[in-house]
Image 1 (cartoon, helix red, strand yellow):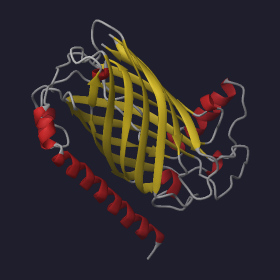
Image 2 (cartoon, rainbow, N blue to C red; image 1 turned 180 degrees about the vertical axis):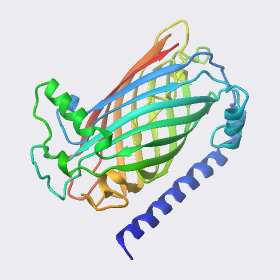
Image 3 (cartoon, rainbow, N blue to C red; image 1 turned 90 degrees about the vertical axis):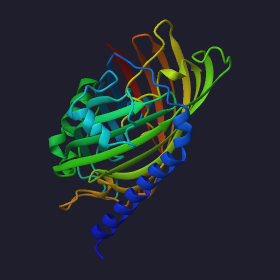
Image 4 (cartoon, helix red, strand yellow; image 1 turned 180 degrees about the horizontal axis):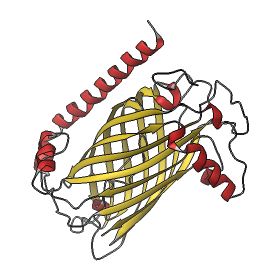
Length: 350
């Protein structure tokens, strides 16, 4: 059997396992959700900018940089075609007045460990860029957040990874990456991502639910597409004030991601510290497997990858600011030290 056929079957199996996990856990939690279907309508939208870079941590390799600009509408979809389409997604997106639509635009840049080599080591991660737009539908209650997202974009030179990375390096007066001539070729990309998050908070004072509290946000995610196919499970542990404002900071997947909309208390500031863990079963990763329909650089990927993250968030009546440091386990055979990168997110409500 050819390698591509094996990869294809593995990707389908991974997607099937991930989808089964999402449906099974969702069904098992239905009774709890029905008892907790408290929805607080929100008439304000959220605009978020998330920036990732490993230079903050003193490295320049693997997932080296990215950004995600996202918009989430006010809650309660207007009656019409979009509302009827969202009805068809139930139970992936719960049918309640909290439903939002969203748009996003992002980029991710990947390089090998040695960016000085003009002909990179063929056993190291290949150069690659991913430029994409996304449309999403989401819903929430006090305890559950659902989201479905369709990503459409391009991998390869058209993603402008070389230009963005090297122009930024020249701006800050450091060496540019020299091996971009060996990046993945142009290829259209599509991903369909579904996720469900649960929010459990325990305030120290039961009469002040938005006061000082501890909480945990478990989550399941399934992604299917020619760019990334995987199933993941993780959780974020938090301590702070106003934990009901969100489900954790928004991130670029496959990192542990929270809600892209924030709904803080309107009359006071909040904060929290958090630690997250995530494990995913990988069926396909174009940034490691190489191009789908033509020959390109590639490496042997790890089937199981884990993330750990530490960070904090500051919540204010008109938005939030968060900072996260992420540790990522080996993603391919022969990889060097564990990858690390930092993320900063600013979200504004209007």
